[in-house]
Image 1: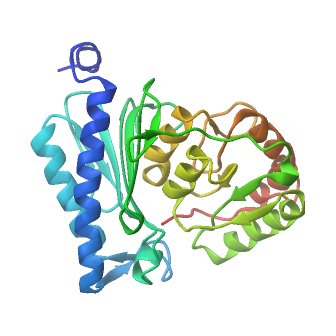
Image 2: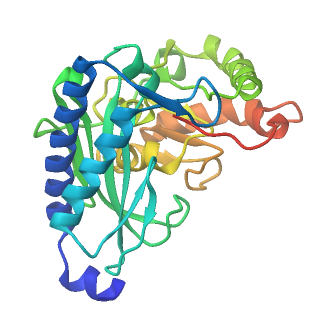
Amino acid sequence: MSSTSEATHGPQPEELRFLAERIAAEAGKFALNRRRDGVTLLGSKSSPEDVVTEADRETEALIRQLLAEARPHDAILGEVGGATPGSSGLTWIVDPIDGTVNYLYDLPAWSVSIAVFEGDPDPRSWNLLAGAVEVPSLGETYSASLGGGATLNGEQIKAIEASSLALSLIATGFTYSAANRTRQATALAGLVSEVRDVRRSGSAAMDLCLVASGRINAYYESFVNPWDHAAGSIIAREAGAKVGGFDGNPESYKLIMAAPPATYQRLEEKLRPLYTGNDGLLATTSGADCKR
């Protein structure tokens, strides 16, 4: 089946949303039970600090199994298992545990993130159709579909503008590369006096959902992989937030920002020189990096 045929005659975004919700909820329950049994480390990813657990592998395997049963012709891109090809033109993108270090330390800020898109696996060009983020420790399910709005536990949610940047609560995150984390901290130091305060959950998917639900006013981060933010991005957009980079560009590995439009503009104006000047974060970043 071609992508065009799938888009015309296949499931509508709302159907895909319900499937993402169901599978994320089942995977979240599984991962939470595994956490209660204790965590087994399998190794690390980009650095010794960037860990992967047995539960990451097992939870992604469960998600893949459930997706294959429901949608056998779709492709899957997972943080742990990589890419599995499909023929439908749709791809599911999966982070089985976003915030693995939180999971390791038994902190509640971790989530299961599942989204589906048309096109290439590139945030700069893909077309996100639906997504769900499950936060098992808090009993919360965020979801959205293209044109269908965003919900938290079935209730509509909306991003909230702050009256000024000084009254905006901002979230961000840090990479596991020590050198780049130091540069991120330097950029943050140039912003922190301009905002109400800063939060750091350790899960990009959760941060985007916090923007969507109005619990924070904005989020920005660099070095975030597509599976970390795919579901959260469509949830934030459908809740009325703008998601992207600088100067109207889409979100990318280098930068993702999310906020209601006026707050987004204010944040962008403050962040741009901290990121793009001669001593800015993106001008001085060294080498490749991975996240979560």
